[in-house]
Image (cartoon, rainbow, N blue to C red; front, side, top):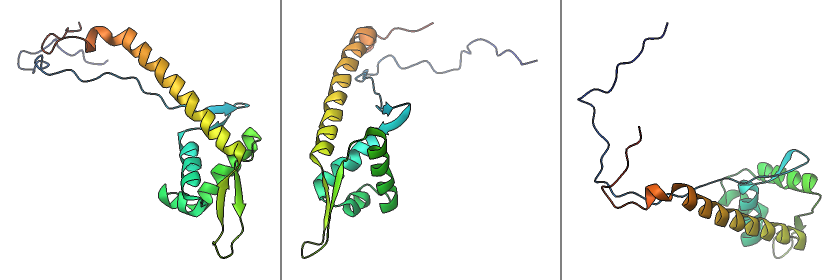
Length: 146
């Protein structure tokens, strides 16, 4: 049988009531599932952003500390699950080749960014509504929960 712990001890430290409360904010990670399977998320979007910036899958993978093979796997999953061709490889030559986002890939990335902004805006408002009583208090006026 589990042992029941005694009540509060007098020697336990009380929570500091003179500490300045920090900013309370909600956080969430967003994934988009297609047919019940993960198709888009923060990591895959960072990969698309890095490809757009570097114009190279190899450079994007290196920047994200990801293997080239893993980067290709993420791209293949995005394309298989969404049905959208997101990248277009360029053959080598004097420029050395590279990888570009397709117009559809750029549009998908932009749609995810806008979706993320909408969710963040709504989440911020909900956090304000639900937790304002705690983070709007003056320093040292914290409420003790019982």
